[in-house]
Each structure stands twice: as C-alpha cells, then as structure tokens.
Amino acid sequence: MEALVKTERQQSDRDPVAGRVRLVAIDRLRAWSILGVVTIHATSPMLAGLVADGSVDTTYFKLLAAVNQLGRFSVPAFFLIAGFLTTLGGSSRPGDPFAAHGSLKRRMIRLLAPYLIWSTVFFAMPHWIGGGGVDGGFLRRFLIGDTFTGGYFLIVLAQLTLLAGPLARLGIGRRRVAWALCGSLLAGTIGLFTVAAHSAGPDGELMRSGFSASLSLFIPWASFFLAGILLGLSAGRGRPVPDSWRPICMTIAVIAYTSSLLEFDGVLAASGSLGLAASFLKPSSIVFALAVCTACLAGVSLDRSSPGGGIGASGIARPVMILATGAYAVYLIHGGIIRFLLGIDGEPWHSLLHGPAGPALLALGSLTLALIGHRAALRFLPRHARFLLFG
Image (cartoon, rainbow, N blue to C red):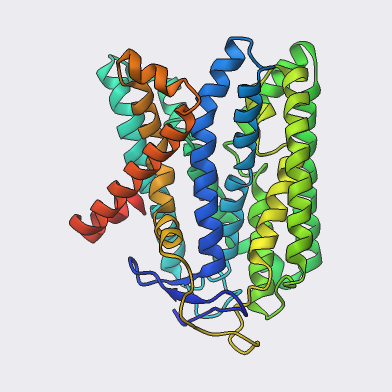
C-alpha cells in the first residue's frame, strides 16, 4: 500500500510489528482510548460494589465515577477509528474502501478469530470445567459478545465491517445524505437511551433490557463508524477538519465531560441502573467522545498532493507507540486479567483492592500484564499464531 499520510504536526511511520503505514494522530487517539477502556473496567467493579452497599453519596463513589466517566470517549473512538481506517481499504487510494477482495476477508478474520479464541479461554473453558453444557444460553452469549469483557465490540465491528463498503460509497457519492444518515442514527441512539433511562415501572425495565440487548447490534454505534468514514474521506481528498477547530473541540469536550457527571447522577437516580448511568451513549458522553475524536483528528490529511502530505519520520513517543500497537491485544485480554486479579485469595490483597488504591492497581496490573503478553507473543510466536491471538 502506498504511503498516505502526514499533516503539519502529525506524521506517519511504519508499524514496527506489521510493516503497515501508521498515522500518528490515530495512534495517539488509539493509545488514549485503550487507557480509557482499562480505566473504565478497573473502576467498574468498585462502583458496582458501592451501589450494592448503598454508598452512592460518598466522596469515594463520586471520585470513582469521575474517573470512570473520563474514559467514556474510548469505545466510540475505536468505532470512529475503524471507520476512518476503512477509507484506506486495501487500496493505494484513500476513499476506495475494500478495493482488494482480501481486505474484507482479512478484517473479518482479524475480528472473529481472536474473539473465538479468547471467548473459549475466558468463558467456554471455565463454563465446561464448572460442569456447564452447550445450551441456548451458552450459544446466545457467543452470538452477542457476552463471553469476555468488551466482547460485544468485536461482534458489532464485524457487522459494521460488512456494511463499510456501501457506507463508504454513500459517503463518496452522496456526502450530504451520508451526514444526514449519521445524524439520524445518532438521534435515534440518543432517543433510545433517553427512553430507557427515564421510563418508569415495568415498561421502563423492558426498555432498559432492550437497550442493553441493542448494544450488540450495529445500530447504536453506526453513527460513530460512519462519522469516521466521512472524516477519512475528507482527509483523503485534502479537506481535513481545520486545525483551528482543535481548541473549540477541546472546550466542548470539557463542558460535555462536566455535564456527563451531572447526567450520571440523574440517570442513576431515575433508573437505578449503573450501566445506563455510566453508559458511552448518554447524550453528554456522546458529545464528549465526538469532541475528543474531532480534536485529535483535526488537520489530518491523507492527500499526498496537499501541503504536508506524504511520508515523514514519526514524532510519536515510544510509550504511546507501545500502547497503540498493543491496543487490540490489551482490549482482548485485560478484562480477563482484571477478573483474575479480583479472584486472588487472601484478605490483605482483597483489602488492598477495595481500598483507595484498588482501581489503580487493577488498571496498572492488567495493562502491564497484557502488554507483556503481547510483546512476548510478538517475539516468540510465529506470525500466524500472533494473528489468531491478537489480530
């Protein structure tokens, strides 16, 4: 694939692992996003325990909720990144999605092979060891991505990958229609969330159940993926988001994040559901995610003929590159590591985990062990084994 990328401040380099062309702006966003995902899953067990104990008015709960909400741009960002990179497809021309037949096939394998392997490790094997059988509930969990932490993301992304070609062609041929569709999908997601969060009685419980089930479908997430496609197409044509938008977007992000804390409290009080209160799909969290992503991608151009286009040496810090290249591996296995750490016996360890330092220990421990596992796989496993495990 020909070289694609650099902007006035953001340059491209070769992936030291796979030899792929990389975008520094995307790598930075990916690195921050995986930190956000790990932070969310490190704080969630403590938040759930405090809700169960009725301790939602404590300072510790408020602090954990604030840290948890700070990462709520992350999964929408991963969908947006996937859409943005889809515009590169298997072709040398930005905006020519899936020009190579093998590109779609490889993307699907990259999603589903690791999903099946880690679903077996984290769900099927413990289920069988515990005497469970293969029944409807077992198969349903595989289908909806309820087999390991964050598994639904891979199921949804596989669905969106199948739709990526038509969505990108819509963006190329009828850009305004594509943006209108993006806005309609976003409005539908916000409407569905609002009804689920604020409906009372049996109907409210039914709506909350339906909203939870919908998270394994592409519809609530498609707006982020399509927005990424459209931003990628603009960047490919030399019309990126203006760099001057960055401070505006960051200001909006700060306001949206602050609003998300207030919305967290309101939704928790109205619905009693921590999942809804902390959701990525709260209106304030959606604005927060879109503002962060737009700020990170401002100025990115994939047009070699535009000023600053082409290839240059990367200025990205090594820790950020390590996080970016290992992000998919970390996403796949960090949840299992957190569950392992939570399950270690011993009163001193339990006391430490459930103290103020607990979430930091879970986040740092799971991130470190996941990155070590990924780097070990890169060094010692053959290429096909690495691909099956970590895409």
